[in-house]
Length: 317
Image (tube, rainbow, N blue to C red):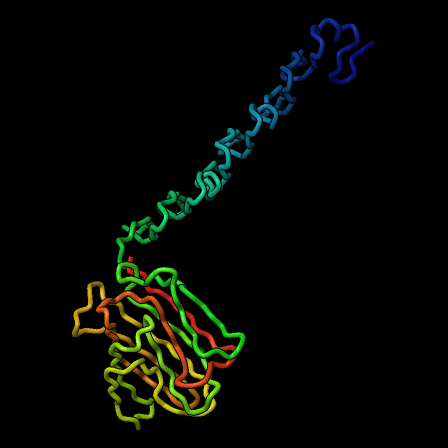
């Protein structure tokens, strides 16, 4: 059998091809091209068929969790990373990389996430109960705030379900200057009798001194000085069928009250078409500055159903 193009005759091919998988290729003449290695592919290189190793996924990735990406010139492997890290791109011309995530950064209940720099996560560990979050050197930080008072604490809230002669608050223990710097009393009330003023007493004291002065918002009433009376007048007008909204702040000194000084009180009361400002003081006959009872009542009759009184304490520490 003669040659047919570049093909060997059957007898000649057997003597040239010596190993299973050999092929015949032509360079300057016909030649045997031996079998390549497992996984290699035949591709053209330098104008000749050539066995080549190509980086495929299975040949590049070696460990469970690896990530395959295109490197500068070939496929590349990014090995697995720390638990809860996240994969981030780094822009054009750069390879992807693992970086910390919010989940990996926060390690304990109460931790707070913040940026310690541009695109940089950081953890602020939880602090002690009562600490305050503040900015320090440009980043958040926990700060233990020295005792200074100012926090508002709800002490009592009462709403009448039937007409009653008074709204009052008697704490389980006295409100003392060691604990409170002021007591705030908010009342929304309506008397059942027309033409009465509103009054307040402290510590059930009706024989001590209550000093007060009152002026209407219209400026038509003169300041009234009530001295050595049985109660403190919150509203000195005798208007009919009025709902009065009153806020009274009682300042408690942080030392024993001398015999010639008083707990100071300030009240803003508003009713239909009028406003009232009242300032005054109180000196108990026992010369003490604790508050054991706050009593708020109309001059006569009862408070209507729905009248309310809420008491807050301004904490000193």
